[in-house]
Image (cartoon, rainbow, N blue to C red; front, side, top):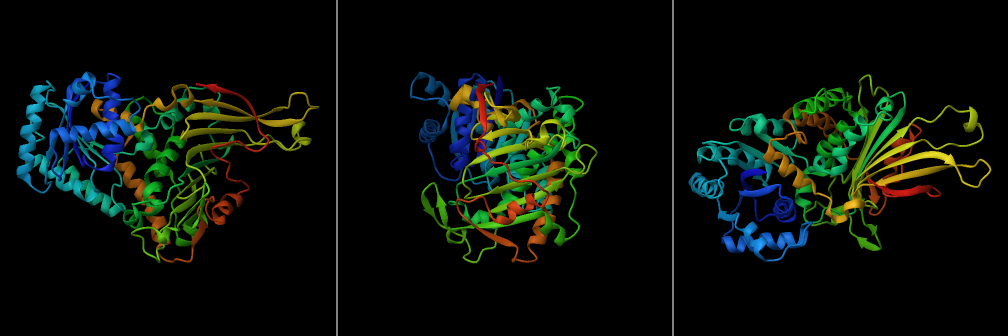
Length: 506
């Protein structure tokens, strides 16, 4: 079982309320947290321990996978939570924090292990890291690990500056950069499906795969994040981390060992193999950016991006982007990876579609029938599962061939109690398993790739394409795929006229 003092900076914020406190409770209920742990909530506002525990209880009631009531089990859990008001610029406050941490360490027999979770703005990471050291919190027995949220910088120079500040205090092996998509069940299952099944891995190359499509769509707008989004945009908010990380998992070679560093080494090789853009015209030929205007989402009229709170009325920030990406190595040479993400799209979903090459034309059955390509789909969110489409004879017909779907629903078996990404990642960080955290060289290479796109986009504004909320982005996003003779496959549903053979739980 995990034994540590978890220090949560930004404990009154939205991330802690929605994700972290419910994650602690689930880990506790599943006995992955025993009795030798403590959680210290840290923020500027004044709260008593009782008020803080009430806040934690409310967040668990609203967002946790398990029901909670205030009973003896709750009292035993809540006893491990304490709160301290902290000015992160005051070193004396960190010295007081060390006293509290040492007291809880002794009380719960933790042994000096400390995990510092910075649910803060990235520009504060360096200052907090230095004050942790100055306040004596990195001294003594046990391990000391730093967990930090995205965004890790705004571009490569800012990321390098931020990393240099943190590395003055923490070693790379003790820095855990969270990308919560890497904690999702089906993202982690991709490599199991690839490497544990003999009928997939031999086909996982440019000889048999025609293209791979990665879609991460959201129905929401920028909500209250207008100020942040104006500075970020879809490319930096989703592309540099979630999208490229999923691409790397799809394209990586089998690691020599199931060791965190070996797995991350293979992802780095993918990033190094990404075909870079040599000019702004090359960027524009392979990327599309868009921004939503007023439209209709599920029967509700919603405003355009420029009408959102804290957004410049003349903003050119992209809320949608699509790109054609190539991995120039022997396995993937010539295979396009299409990635797209956007806000105010018709459905909320994250899916990866592997489209296999079709059988040769004018041979056997393909002479008389227009055969659909085989598809392997990883459904990451909101439903989790694997979907495979193949061609088969329609029962009772005179040789009519139709697409047949075999749908393996992973989340159907456990329903709403499927483990959350933050539970896995918190647990992994406490155990010292860095497999699904991003290493610095991954971050740097991803920024290097994305910065070329952002720089080209910054040279002109006439390539920002508008799309109505509730649609699948600008028409140019569809043309990007059509240029190669392909189309975006439907997500979160089935093709019209498709037959489904069963609904099988994994």
